[in-house]
Image (cartoon, rainbow, N blue to C red; front, side):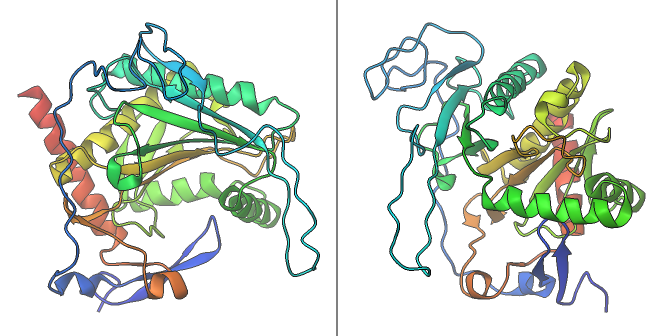
Length: 347
C-alpha cells in the first residue's frame, strides 16, 4: 500500500505540527450537514450595502463615490488604539496588552465582482492597495505585525458580499506568524538557506502538488495541507520577506496565480467558493528577517461539494488535524478545475 490509500502523518514545516492523512475515509457514506447554496447573482450596486460607493456605513460615515480600491479604518475594529490590562493576581493567569488598528480594503466599486471574477488590472489594483496599506502600517513604531487577509462567503463569517479584504495591525506578533518565524529561523541556522525557497524547489522537482504558476509565483497544495483544497502561493524569487518587496511584475504575477486558483475553486464546486486567504510576511519590527519568505495561504472549507464542508472537530480539536484526501489528489482536482475554467472563458 502507498501513501495514497493508507493513513499516515505529515509534518508542517512552517509550524512543526503534524497532520493525520486518512484517504480511505472518503469511502464512508456522508450523512452530515449540508450548507445552503449562496446566491451567486448580485447587482453591480446595492443601495443597502455599507461598502458600495456613496452609501452610508453603520457608524454614519458616507463612502465617497469611489472607483477602484477604497481603504478606510474599520468602523468596528477588533483592536483598540490603546490597551491596558490589570494584573490577574496569579502567575497562572497571564494577560498582555494588545493594541493596534484595523483597515478595510474594498477591491472595487462593483458589488457583483469577486477576486475570482475581476479582470487582471482590477486584481493588480486590489493587490497594490493591500501592499500600500501594509507598507504604511509596517513602518509604525507601535506595530509588531501586519496581517492582510480576506474572508469570503457567509460560510466563513463574512458579513458583506462586497469584495473586500481586511488588515489587522497588532502590537505583538500573532501565534501563527510567530510559529512560522521560529521554524524558518531554525532552518536558516541549520541549513544556511531559506526554508520556503528550498521547499518550493523540492515541490517544483516533484510536481505532483503544483496547481498553477506564472513567471513570478507558484501555487501548490502544501504537502502538509489540513484543509481539503488548501493552497500555498510562493514567489519564485528568494529573499522576498514582505509584500512591499514585490516588484510591479511580481504583483501582476501574484494576481494572475491568485485569480486562477480562486476561479478554480469556483469551477470545482460550481459555486462562488468561500475561503479565508491571508498574506504571511515577516514581523514589522524593523529587522531584516533573512529567514522569512513571503507567502499566501488559502483555506477553502468545502470538502465534497458546494454544500458539504470540512469541520475541525473531535480528534482534530483534541488530537491533531486530519484530512480525507491526499494533497496530491487535491492538487490534480484543482489543476483540472483551473483548466476547465480557462477553457470555458475562451468559449
